Image (cartoon, helix red, strand yellow):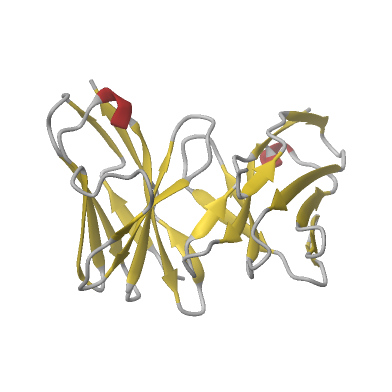
Length: 114
Length: 110
């Protein structure tokens, strides 16, 4: 089946630094990748929709200059949290929609900013 | 109003019990409906899609009422391994992005 590989699974960083999260579709081409964020006891909230070769579409309230998304190829999308702060600590997860296979999720990245 | 609403629970039930979860959604134009299961600190995994006619997969039965914008999930003969958070998921306005409910927590006890 369709697999999305997400790295890193866990990262702890200092406040003010940047963190890059990668999602790769391993056996299919992901023209669209969705990036979600989940705070404890909350639902997954869509942050942005990333399309290969074009600019990402951000949801209301999500700062595009803070959460940089790059989708340079059909198999790789990255989310960079720039100048991270403790309030950015969360579970970040990507999802792609594969033909005939529905939505596939990465395994998630737990970010802790100290 | 949230797009997808669920009772957060927790539901604590003994092994073998039958438990039902409900969900309502606000966007009448939604076309796709799912139940996902999420274990603690893990990614969501698809449990089943929900079809208008209702559908069953083993011990799990899902129902959809478009008129009431209501989705349900019934779990029969609960197992310890069913303990998880169950997410009601509906496709969103942007075409293919999913809208998630907060989830309903289930704990099955021996």
